[in-house]
Amino acid sequence: MEEKELHKKSYTRVIEYIKEQIRKGNLAVGSKLPAERDLSAILGISRNSVREAIRTLDFMGVISSQQGAGNYLTGNFEYNLVETLSMMFLLDQIDYKQISQLRRSLELQALLLAIDNISEHEIAELSDSVAELEHLTETGNILLDKKLHFTIARASGNTLIISILQALSDLIDQFISDLRREILSSPDSKYILWEAHSNMLQSLKTRDRELAYKAVNMHFDIVDEKLASNLDWIRK
Amino acid sequence: MEEKELHKKSYTRVIEYIKEQIRKGNLAVGSKLPAERDLSAILGISRNSVREAIRTLDFMGVISSQQGAGNYLTGNFEYNLVETLSMMFLLDQIDYKQISQLRRSLELQALLLAIDNISEHEIAELSDSVAELEHLTETGNILLDKKLHFTIARASGNTLIISILQALSDLIDQFISDLRREILSSPDSKYILWEAHSNMLQSLKTRDRELAYKAVNMHFDIVDEKLASNLDWIRK
DNA sequence: AAGTTAAAATTGGTAGTACCAATTTTGCGA
DNA sequence: TCGCAAAATTGGTACTACCAATTTTAACTT
Image (cartoon, rainbow over all chains, first blue to last red; front, side):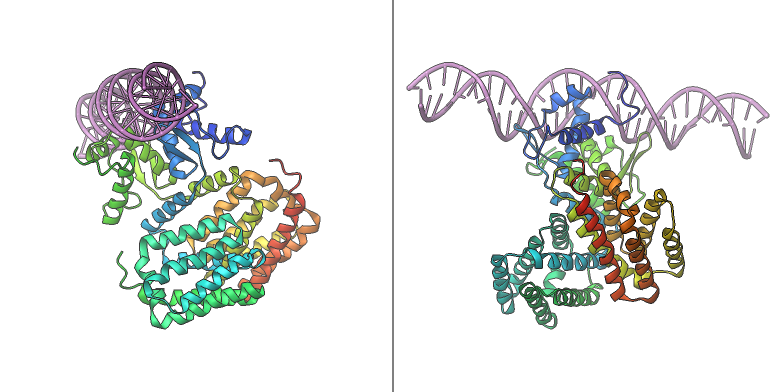
């Protein structure tokens, strides 16, 4: 135990070690990490410090801890993204409007990318969803709407955009699921929304980027409108 | 120490406690958290478990730990976002192309929002940057380019979009700063990029959304082109 | 009385030990 | 060879002790 690497906190060395091993190719998704007691010995720091780092990596989604089995490199960042956004929201750093603005741009980009990548099977899947959406009980709306948007996102082929959109969807579920329900089932917005969804589908079928642009904006214009008119009586 | 709340891991209770206190209004940005030994007593768990949670929250950016002083609620998520993206990149879950696609959509949305929000002062700032960019040493390009994009992002007023764009910029610095330099200073792309930047500024001055759309796409078309032609000899 | 400074208390950072709990591995017995 | 129980492995939690940085206290000086 010599230099201690210049005042750097112990637990950071664990994270650096993991990243280094990944870069070197000694660790990949699915790999088992050295046992905590071994890491402790390898790095010359206490198991406490190792665990603080391991816990952080676990929370981030880099690894997955399984008592009795070990720590495994995974790479599931969904929970991390949701939790981060959730915290930003809790601390009043972001609000509904900003979330909607972000969604608008990402949904548009996802749709544009999907035009080039979507499969016939996925188009058929979307067609069914749109058809169902036209006349459906109000409780089923939400799941179907989420499925529809997710299918488009997935067809974009961009995992980064997919992840962010998924996290935003979860965030909405967590904080304003009732508002989402209100928007989806409200009589005056239901048809316009269906039309927007229908146009999104149509843009995919005909590879019409202009229509895609219009459809997504139509969608979020109505969402923003309902958002604004319902934002008052939202419980905080 | 009675129920132990159904198999839930100890450290999660700390995070729940913090979130609860925030919701109740007992904690806000700037607040000092109870000392770790006190949290340990309050929640009936060991200080180890408290620290694992505190360390995680610290890494997330929710709090900031200061030895000797205490743990303070902050809310600086930049580092968290960068680190998460960095890990996704390391684990090959995202690549340059996806990052560029995300940037394209966010930069466009930022520019469109900035059209409505930008101040005269910020426009003047951008004008100077664009003017300087026209004839400048190649080393100065990068900082000026970053400043220009950041000014637009900031003018969007959307902290979420700003945060993500900033994180993406940091990510690029971390992994392909040399490629960024190559793109910015390459003779055949330099002028087109300047033109794109100039058009972005012009769209802000005249509130021309159509031009904004064209300018951003022009910008990322050339970036993607250079990216594709340089992707081969990138060290991995 | 006010300001300065050094001691004391506070608080996060690290280390080590012990034991519990879930899982995996070992190896014995049918 | 198969099945199952014991043993070993490994993460989860607790407690104690001490270090290191900061803050607070209080005594001292002017």
